[in-house]
Image (tube, rainbow, N blue to C red; front, side):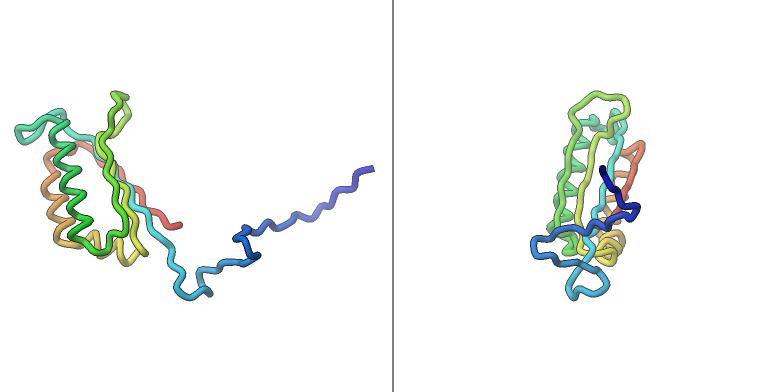
Length: 131
């Protein structure tokens, strides 16, 4: 005979020492923010090919890491597939918290980058989330 309980067992994450982490209680705990942006580029713009503009955007984005202290980590990728629904350039960046992301968004270097690419891109998608 098998007896099953109707109670649901609460499963807690195992951090190695039976420690529970509570963002509200643990001092120094920060919710890291991930910022992902994807761009579709025009086939040509400002006298350059899509490929050349993608490389240029990659260079400009990588320079932001040096110029904007709030960026904890930054990666830039250029798509290599020909899929119809693929985007051409992707940015993956990490920030300490939402405040750091907000300061990045209003930083003059970031605003300048957005102005420089305005004529290069035909679409943009953004996702921001905390972990």
